[in-house]
Image (tube, rainbow, N blue to C red; front, top):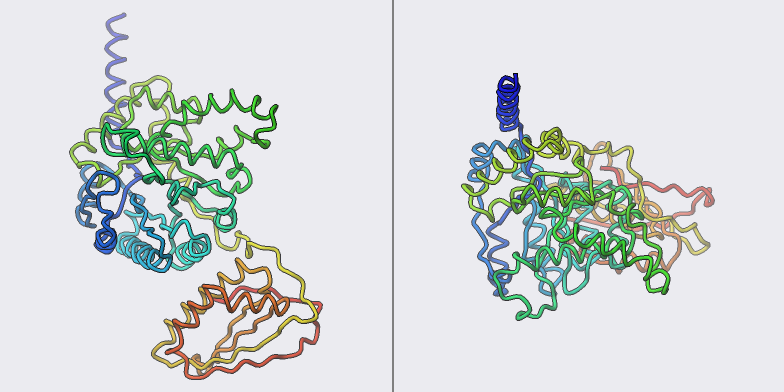
Length: 463
């Protein structure tokens, strides 16, 4: 009987492992490396910033890897180095080119790719503009945030406005480490920075977010921590142990440690061992684990071996085996399921009341026919950003003449003169103004008298 029982156990185990091999995998940690990005980094002598050469990437090879490895869908993001060298316009340009490239890849392969937009950190206003454009116009599936840029880490209060925008859009946010700045090059000389500094950098950023209660203050954001949680399984018990002492000495504010941690997801990029995954499960639950490959930074034969090994190890484990399909597929499907836009909040900031020196204006614009579609993209972008980020911009409602859609009228209302001055001085308005000069045939601005000034209508530009 014992032999029969052992035989049946072996048979069931083998059948389970074979079934697990056929699970359609969703890879939440893969990267795109575009020619524009490579050229831009090269112009700043930054190709070896991480101490390791950037790999080549192309759509066909990525799909071939996915097919061979049994990956049904991959999430594309921009890796490190962060394309920021102090010039916000330059950084925004290359970030936009990478985001539009990822959007194109998804359009051609809607069943194989999702993507999370990069942002021109650390510039908050430019990052908000790009996030809104990527999520609302390019149909991005989420946002990728660098852990820090120029020493400014996620969790810093200066990022709160950006976090508010992402919270209202219920955004998935994938974190990725970068080379910390400043850094003492002689502190760790055992290899490229991804060996030690990447997990240390990630841990610093996440702990800073926890310390500032980012996840509990913006509960609709779903944050993915890379590389099996980095050093978080070691850092969390230390934080919990030291927090009461810090609070007693008034060296910290109130922190909801467990509340913040409960909002975090973790990808398994980097090929962690079963022991490392079990360590990760001391600070999270199986429904918050996700598969990640780190393609194309790891050779494809190595990745194929890793994915098979992890599947087999987890499948054979009595504690985790039942969650293998969730970890490799179902959890990611739930994470990236989008909320209907009509359920999202319309505005990220409370609007100011209309004051005595408020402005109600009709902007009448005649656009050259050949530029109509391009002009409307500019108009939608500036209107959306203005309403989302400027409390004094109350209304931007655009309509077009049915007989001649090149004749556009925009109802604009501003809480006061100061709000209007701030609006026309903003970077997003100046971008709209300068970018559409050659598209506009004529423009007239007619201030009008509101018949019911106490009934302010707040609307988004119609898309």
